[in-house]
Length: 179
Image 1 (cartoon, rainbow, N blue to C red):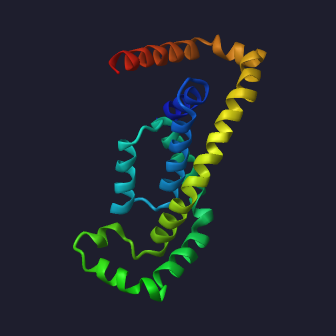
Image 2: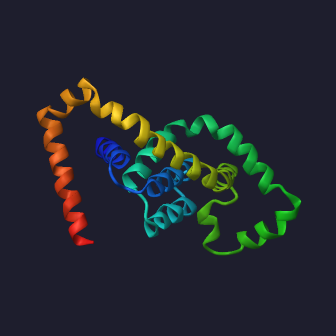
Image 3: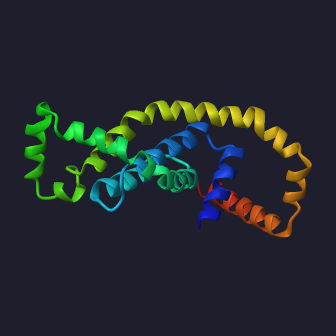
């Protein structure tokens, strides 16, 4: 599954997928990676991404890679969540929210969940523009060099790679025909 996401991510970087779609997918992947999974808040965020035009392979790859690094950010996210949950101005809102029947399933009162959610939402827009610039830079500067290298050409001649790229091309054509 991870290899499939990696192939889709590389295809997105090298294809004609809009750089905004790729950047938004990466920013959403970061948001989902910062929020601990296994609660209703994460599930709602995950399902909301399906209502937007994103490159889902890139989102899943970003999510998978950054979920591995998320424990390193846990102390900072925990401190941020604690500061938000203990803010006197927000106490009435959190008290009212705790009486809503479904709200405890979101685990909003968990410091890691709250810290990850707030950090992800605050960082989303700067990350979007940063990733968009990175994708544009990759496509204009780095990708032509990679495609011209002997190593890339030899790699693309491997039988397994040829079959995978052919399968992805046929799936892409089928997807375009259905739209």
